[in-house]
Amino acid sequence: MIKEKTNILLYIFIVFILSSCIFLLYYKDKWLSIILVICFFIFFILYKKIDLFIILSIFFLIPIINNIYYYNIGLKNVEEIRIISLNSYGGVGEIKGRKAYLSGNLNDLSLGDRIIASVELNKDINIEKGIIGEIEINDFDKLNLDIKGKIYRIRENIFNAVSEKLGSRRAALITSMSFGYTEFLDREDETTMKNLGVLHAVSVSGLHMVLVYTILKKIFGRNIAPIVAVIYVIFTGAAISTIRSYIMLLSLSLAVPLRRNYNPLAGLSLAGIILILYKPYSIFEVGFQLSFLSTLGIILFNKKFNKVFYKLPKAIREGVAISLASQVFTFPFLVLYFREFSLGFLAGNLILMPLMNGVVILGNLLALTFKIKFIFNYLSFIAYYATLSLDILSEKLLSVLPSILYLNEIIAISYIVVIFTIYFYKKGYKNIVYFPIVILMYIYINIYSPLPKLEYYKDGIISVSYKGDRNIFALKEGVDLEKYKVITLSNNEYKDFNKIKIKYGVEIEKSNKDILIKNKDKNHLIKLSRGKIDYNYDIIDCKYSNYIKIILYKDQVLVFN
Image (cartoon, rainbow, N blue to C red; front, side, top):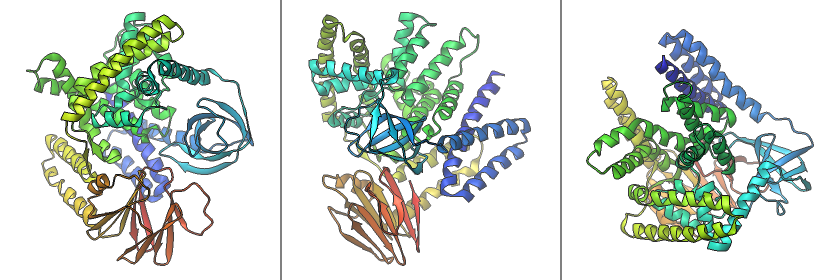
């Protein structure tokens, strides 16, 4: 019975994922999405589980209805907007629980502010980011801070207090680890942690939630700890990984008084279901995917790796096992998203994480005592030497560990294909051994590029490849061309360009900050700027994208992101 209930939660979670993906696909290719839905229903009919088919069919509709409700919003002329992100171009605001890009006069605004402003929504749905469109802000009135706004101010005040004692760089490091205040995190620190494979520790993650929850349970007991932990979740900005971890920990805590056996896979599925209902777009966020895949790897492989390394001392064995298990499913996604992988992640996690956990505890104690000066000053003294030790250890590790490895998406796809092959082969599908042949086909298409292919990277690179000729071009100064030459497997690199001619009869040229593709009788514009376009081009909007792949076929373009 317990196993069936676990399977039901897992099935519902998988159906939620499939339904959300099909909703996204519907905006890109309606017929393909319809075909996939039909295949979904046919599978369960052939599976002859009619009762399961009816239940899952109902749950299949829930995310679609939820998404339709989220993106079809009626706005008045004047609406309340909360500022949730600010940058040099504008920001992101929350309006009626939906996200929208903001532009215009945002100089006098801070994170967490609520404003009343006249609203004219330029509807431009981005399902992967949960964006309903863009709103230009000109005149507005500020509202009094509510609880959420006050939390933002408290975090700023804590940062300023720590900054006065330790400097802004150390303050940013401590507050980002402890309660997710990453706004002032030094880029060099971020790069260092990325190279050491511990970037997840420089923001509140599931591991932080486990650490804090464990301490709270010892202080307040099993009954009060979940309530106090909610305050911590809100205070840290309610990151997806934190919410996921909290739901799983809450499920574990409730299992004992309810006399139920806790199943971590069911807890993970429940967390995923709640998050997709809460934020329909969350499934497409990198944080969601890496958090859930990392946790899934730990659930399935942690014990197995512990057995493999049984001869090692317990502390080292457990650290190695959990580090390797968390990478089993996240590795290909790290490569696909970031095109790089830290070879020193194991040493980084084993050596730095215990010290980082100490910094997390110190940071939270500083947050609790920043009004009690003598305690705050003493803790600041300890925090200084903790971060100094972290700096020294990080520098030593960087000097002996191999440099970060730049990888192409071919590695990620090949890894996924091999994992699927091994899984189904063990399940008895012996003919699956021929499946890796698709890797060879994919490598050929990717490297040879029988059709002209363009790849845009937000760092400021455009790659152009056709029939084995692969070149990269810098769109701005200071770009790491050597890195992207490896990632794109390019033959040549160019620091600048005005016009590129491709043998296929296509020309690519700069058009101010944008890129114009002249494709025989039809022109397409890769839009990188924020201004309005007066020309009659087909627009490929990349201004908010990290990566776009464009394949040219006759007068058409196929866009993948």
